[in-house]
Image (cartoon, rainbow, N blue to C red; front, side):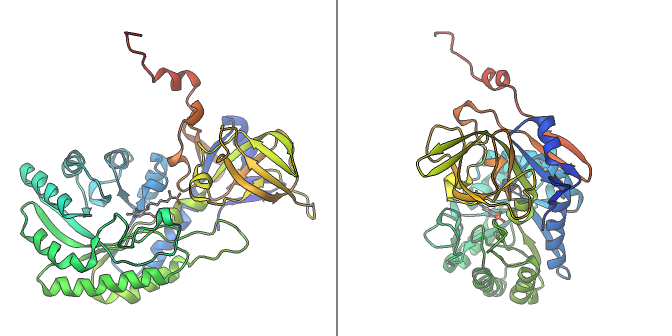
Length: 421
Ligand code: LLP
């Protein structure tokens, strides 16, 4: 459920008409609903009720500081994957003790920054990283709390580009090798083993892969404890999928996911951490765009928008689908017509949907891409010298620009031309 509904014939973000935001900030833009973000965060809180737990929002999905502040005020921690994300989380007011550092390629500089600023734990992904962290922490006279990310060799049954839990993927260490690597970790200076980490992929629409992975983690917990390690924290990753169309998808509910966690690892007495991104942010955001032209092609009509693949790359990159709806509510019973919906960027990949049936729209009309809150704004670029589009946050009947649109001059002024030219 989200808070983007038609009211009085116009699409609203909570109590604000989307057209009013468009008039104020221009198009295209992203708009997020606070109520939806908090609702989704709350679903995980409810799902894990009864277990000692921390929900670390995977801020790679949506990293505007206003969003981080909103979630952190409700008790969220953050899952970060770079120094930039770490600094952003801190700037938004998230305490270091609630930040976990994931990622396969943490640099020594990143490790140092996190140790200085405070960190809940590093999720270590390889032996060379473990040794580097030991060196960095020891040199600082610090102790780095760690989990080791294990790769359980489970098929997440999701898009190949976002599956991470198979042995051929670059993530984690093979679970069969875990006891050996934990033994090394325990012997290294500057390292404190606190638990185990696993994350098998994103946009999972079935619970079975989670179940398979978490059972392996439960067995490993017992094995590591018998080896003398104090395994007290399990980071179970993120990845729960969301419905991208209203009609035919029904991914598992957080409540069922929570029951699965309790069933598979609940008996171990560990503190549980999860790192959801998309389920919290995905359906909490729209990208709103305006129709520039309607162009008649051979046997098809192109809806040419002012939003493009640089603003929302998911369709071009993952063949992802986003429902596209008119901002003015169509009259009931109006006949839907097929459009190929494209942006102005000079490549065919700049296509959002082909033969997408929607109520007739005309030039100048506003359309909204649903489910664009996760991996939308954060993956945008300035390709074709198109400035990054603004982000707006709505709460009840108020809205605020949380990242303004840069002017062309600001964008252009970032280049410098060497003296010799
Ligand atoms: N934890 C780790 C270690 C991750 O790598 C990810 C996502 C998450 C948590 C959060 O997963 P989520 O709950 O959001 O599924 N750009 C792609 C998705 C990439 C996901 C990368 N890792 C997309 O647009 O579909």
